[in-house]
Each structure stands twice: as C-alpha cells, then as structure tokens.
Image 1 (cartoon, rainbow, N blue to C red):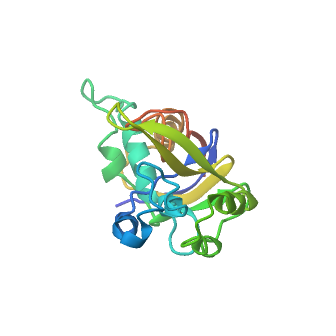
Image 2 (tube, helix red, strand yellow):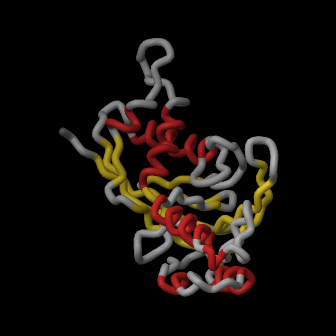
Length: 221
C-alpha cells in the first residue's frame, strides 16, 4: 500500500470553545453534588457550582491542553460528504473514504493558544478552590477565558454554562493518506470545507447546535 504523509496546521478563524464529554469527571461532579456537606454550595443548573467544574470541559493529554484527533476526523467526515468523487456514481462523495483512507498519526493534536502550548499542571490547582473569579484570572494569564452563556434545556429552564474559550489558536499534526483517490488537491479541499463548514469543538458550524465557533484555515504540506 502506498502511504502518503502530510503535515497540517489549523489556524483558527473564530474562537474555539472546548466541551469534553469527560465521563470520569462527570462522575466526580455527581459525587460532589451528592455529598451532604456540599448541599448549601450546590446551585442546580450552574456550572460555577462547584467553581472548578469547567476544568473537566478542557481537553488535555495529561500534560498539555490539546484537541483529540477524533474531533478532527469527525470534522473531515462531514466535509468529505460535501466533496463528490470524480467519475463516481451520482451522489457518491468522499464521506466514507475520509475514515478508511485517512488517519491522523497521533491521538492528540499539538494545540497552541497564541504561540504557546498550555501545560495542564497549573490548572490542577483550581480543583477544590471555590473562587470562580480567580479561575478566570488564571485562564486569562494563559491567553484564554472562561466563557459564560445561558443555555436553555429542552426549551425550558436556562442553565449557566461555562466553557474554556480560546480566542487565538492553532493546532498541528500529521495525517496519513491510504486512498489513491484522495489526491493532494482533494485533501486540501476536504480540509478547507472542514474549516469553513464543520469546524472543531463546541458550537461549531457542523455541530448539533450550530454556531460560528471553531472555524479554521488549513495549511497542508
């Protein structure tokens, strides 16, 4: 099999909002809320209760803030569905081939806020500290912010959501191409469509609740 490898750089056009569906963290938050000692501190439907709940929404690989490669593969899947296969049967696209013919070589992308990587260690200290303003200040020192937004649940009550938001961001990685039909030109098109129409992370154009966040330009080498 002829394998081609390309380096890519994704440069954010719009801010990126992280929302990690972290199952173990959700279990910890449930346990915190069930503790009778925390009953008076708990505010239903408010992510600032406890103040450090947002930490579990931030993707990391144990050492640095990052983006899972699976997120990008999902974006490429949606973009591939928009690119017709030349000479293929009517309606055939590269949707399936983005998953069988492409693979990011690492589980996580190198993620930069501005021009620097963000270590996770300084943020472990917020756990147990019930001072949301201090958390937001720490985030600002590293170039991002804790974005607050009221969100309706099932069209009824509005909950306060807190998400790490990165105004200026870059992600880098390497991707292997296994499918001869995915030429460099096609690959460029798929990445371009992913950046414009699908995006990454929360409130992105191609998400369940579409928004304008997480859009990017892609450079392929």
